[in-house]
Image (tube, rainbow, N blue to C red):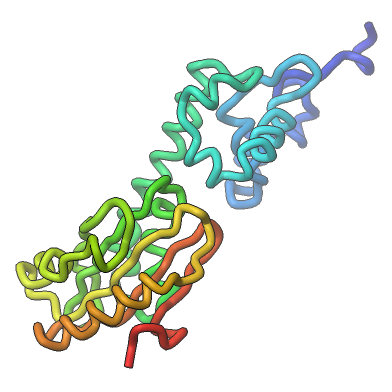
Length: 234
């Protein structure tokens, strides 16, 4: 077999200008595609596919980076060409990204709009397999004091205890809160229960002198602000 017809399985088999690591060094990681970044972790492909092509296939099969985030180690290792080591590298890289997203609020700790609040939790909460309700605690200047997990499971009036939602806010002397929960279906459209919960929390906040600034629902590829929709806020 001639070099021209030799199958390309390794990154080193690619032309130097096409190699992801060299491209990353030359033009920066932000310029690389998701498949190229995955290829740097994978290092080698499989028969008939180089590492970039294998990365692209993984993105298709798992429906993007969010799907890889949700996937288990077992699901990854079941894919041809992804052994235990590669699966661990992918999950480790994603976990580093998740931890960085949690540290990021220190750099943008002021909430100016619903998008700011959603950005703090979108990466992590969009991948959760069950509903989770969190409370962002804010001071008088809308600086984020903390993010507190309150409930896991169905977010409805039969499950929510108002005191639990505001407990951390009272302890931290927060003057305002933003309620955030996710829809595992991926569709952030508010349900009647979401509206009822919002209305109850807004009224309770008035009694406690703690402003409920918003209730944000996180979906797979976006979010919805209940305040902007006028749902549960009078």
